[in-house]
Length: 286
Image (cartoon, rainbow, N blue to C red; front, top):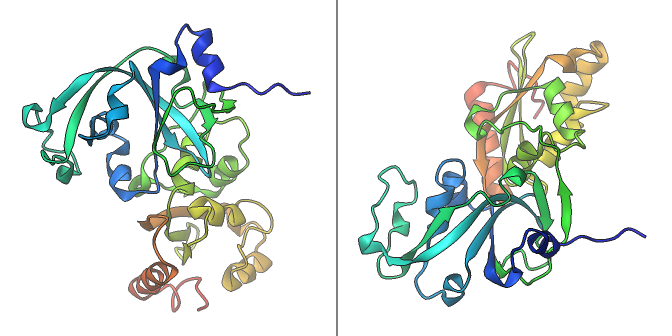
């Protein structure tokens, strides 16, 4: 029988009392967090509601980021150093969510990054559980460890810089080692409009993803046989040249949060088809 290991076991093995730890789960489904995720994770985490009493009751904050469904990927362990009014805080001019500097409602929870579990950054995944809407929990709440990935992993370049040839798409979708976990986390967190470029001919296909699994779920349909995602002109192309998929390059035109409506996404998809002429000159049939 397989033994379940919990995050609390890992804390205790390393001499940390779970009662001293606050667990934070930021969600990439929220656009305000996505804007801060890559550069301003620390600042975003520090600025929280002034009346949130539980935030001041723990020695450590263990910060995770949503990683599909109810999973969460570990990013940093901070030591809590006290609470400070925002009026005393040195603001970061480039911080993308300036409205968070709300002195009436928010405060700065001073956090100092530690070396604790630094070897498990972006490797340790836990199951946050059914209460994923709760962005913080006390460390005594049991969180099963889903996986601890291998040390080798690829950095996600950012939504705007993503250019993924088909062979890399297939490697990501079929990855079981955790090497592409950052990619999977980022692409499953958003809906959007995407572009498939046939690099051999310059022809373009514009599509959209509005399902619960986000862009990752939609792109999975192109990763393996039959490679066409049930799109008419791609089916015709692959019928005439079965290796044409090897020339496909995937990128994002516009991303949306998980709360976006199908109508918003389809209207944006339609706009890009008109702008880029992908019906007349490309691979869109409708």
